Amino acid sequence: MEMERPMILVSNDDGYRAPGLLALIEAVRPYGDVLVVAPQDGQSGQSHAITVKVPVRVDKYRQEPGLEFYVCNGTPVDCVKLAQNRLLDRKPSLLVSGINHGANSSASVLYSGTVAVAAEGCMYDIPGIAFSLLNHDPHADFMPYVPVVRTIVQSVLEQGLKKGTCLNVNIPNVPLRDIRGIRVCRHARGYWVEEYDRRVDPNNKEYFWLTGEYFNEEPEAEDTDEWALSNDFVSVSPVQVDLTCYGELDRLRSWNLSLNISR
Image (tube, one colour):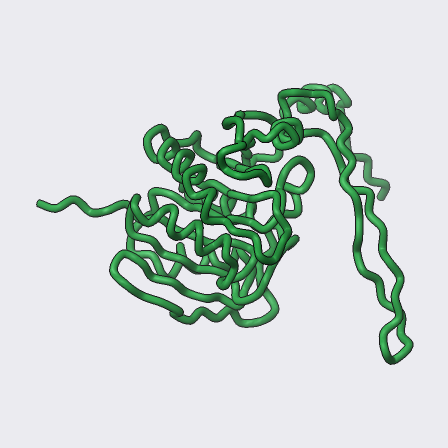
């Protein structure tokens, strides 16, 4: 009896035509049947947003043996929810996201639709991996990095991930031959110093455009993703969806909080 091939769910936040998505699809096709549900338009910075005020629509874009490809007008997380609820006939063995155009390291993980796709898989106990390449060039070539994707995908399929955990993978913007290796590391402590650039439109109405610069609070720490990337390593960071700060629970309980309601 022929064994059923694993099902791999693929999405992204750069839209269904993004070259990084096409490279990711080719990277994972050898590992099983592939279902792609990707946003119609770019959704960078949407994090874990879902659509609740307008209808969510999905259209089949492409089909061939071992591959079904749908386009959704919603957010990256909408794509995963819709796939899980309406399009899949069995539970995926893996959920992969990306390859994102630009980094999703350190604090950027909080804003990333790419990482949110993988994190949404955690809700369904599906191992998830988010891939990003540190290259914003609109003509960036993602195909040379397929071996990086396959190395990590194969490891996750063989080893599995802890329930409620996904991986955030960032690839440095250097030729494949110059990548020094893969480092498992934590996210660096840092933040974006943001500015809103004031501009005026043709109707003489002002508007603002978000700009900013990332500030790394610990540039010398060698166990972080920022250090790995700046030293030409691929960074792999485990991400959990449980945001509870367990180290603070006992301290907060010591406050003996009580509710006083004046009547």
